[in-house]
Image (cartoon, rainbow, N blue to C red; front, side, top):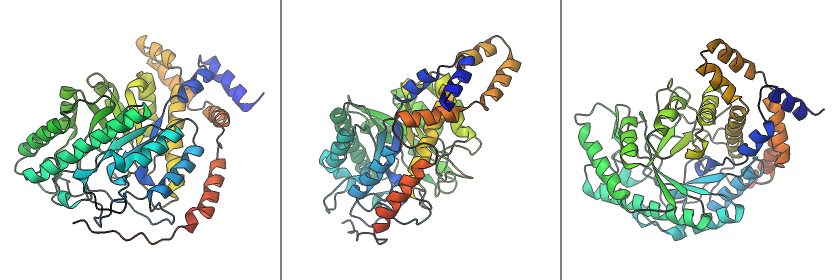
Length: 423
């Protein structure tokens, strides 16, 4: 008997159908984040550095220098992932033909190559306006700025990004989750917390004013950032209230809360009041450091909550980490596989049995079964899944990445193309 057949029988003894779990797992897309491939650089022809509290550490050779290289790297990642997945694209990854195109001038044509690539490869696309790394974000305020000209610039940027998301969703016949995150806030104690939030609310109302059919609006909160340690305009309370009131999606980023606070516990509460949830799954180490996610307890808690609460159908799972200290293709692969593995482990739980024990007040039996599940042979089921999906399992995928690094990444020059300063 094969390892999978043995595992299948052991799970069957607990009332779990591994075939059903594998079939369901194959239907769950993960939205990979484009910015892992180039250290959140984007492809604008400007010299603006990262801002908004975003920092990428490391200088591993071979980062993508242009859209073609980024798509090549992504193709490699998708080829060694089981399942069919999406791409989460930030707006400053558009293709501008070497011209200076400011963000209030973005058009669908600047993303047509991404749409064509996604269509050819059967990927859905998600999108994000880029409210950082721009001279008009240097004050630390964008949509909540006290300067109406600054606010109007960023509102127009957001509107254009919604139009682009609408075009993506329509072209790919798959709704585009379009997520708004702004870095607005103060480093030190503010004298007025209310006014920026009033301005942010008004700006969002205008930004979202046009109805869309294929674009799904989402708003994302944050506890603090570098340069906004004392006050973030878009707090969890602000955005949860806004999402509930306006029935937008609420984006929960695993790194945007207190280090001891898990977003898993928020999912059931949020799900009662918003139409759908967007996740940005990352791993903070001491702060919102966006390390590559691994198969740890925090990730497992998120996956289990999605499965136990029946929330998979109303949750969009996206990733949000960036590590330049290791091979970037490997970082994508490790993190995405960790997310898929966590979902598999959750799908292999006897959820009904656990919940029946709980409802009967048998907390002893519930805890005992949860502990026993930790020793179940999920790894054998994972290997079977990879084999059926025609992708390498275990550590074999790393051999493919090593070969890609030696033949492709090593050929890239360490120097970056000259950027043209924005007018």
